Length: 380
Image 1: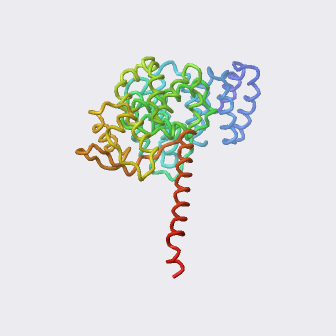
Image 2: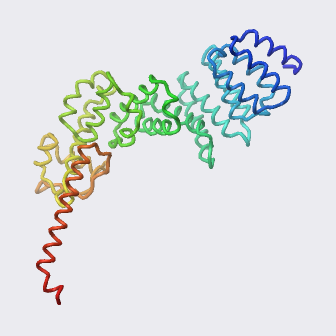
């Protein structure tokens, strides 16, 4: 646009704006004339953050902002562009718009902005079911991010969010789980609406349960996002904790809810095996290190697994790295020397306290015995 027409454009847009936002237009023109680009950018972001500005964002970006786009912080330019893109008619128009934005900021000194814009392009491609195109954009973004010493948190947050969405669409639960947790680590939970927090907690919980490679939910169990699972979803949180402590009785009580989710229902057999593995590791964990040679019969009684499936269950736990040890197939004894650490609930912590007290007592008794029986040695 001709620079002489900018005041006319701002006057026209001011008349179309809500009364409580019109004062900002005086600042726009003043800051633009004085070439105070930083202050102008922040004022524009303030304006774009108002819901009432929605219908004016696209014309503002195309007619006003692009006239000085090269003079402002490129990451903030992309932020303004993303707000404007939300007003495009459809996903195809939004894709073309964002691709142009990404091309504009693709400069050696603004690669963080380029990644931010490229990830936004990947988001739209996911909407259009172009999974291959989205993956290429995400891989390209990840390669650039790996070369940074540091980058703004919003860039990493955007990358992890869209990467998680990609893996969720591909039903790759472990990758979704990891990226979704990384996304939550980059943001403030209060920035999400209650509905978004509930959705994130629900999807993360389902992914943790149905994944065939996730057997330790520690990060999720400690995350405040789980507090969003209340009322009708409280059973899912309880189910996670039941798995964590290998509680078969609790699992049987909560199993009736599994059919309410198609993914859980589809993986019902896998969930049953997973709770058996959790019960096995919990059985081992409760025992002191010197008493971890267990017969198959003992394991069957504590895990409720059929005796003929015990050996397979132990081998599965060993192969997954949940346990370390050996199996005596002749005498049907499992000798375990290590169990994977996990998050403990209050009951498990109390059991640990009891074991420490027992250990302290045995050390005290051993000391008394040595003092009593070795008196002559000490004297000599």
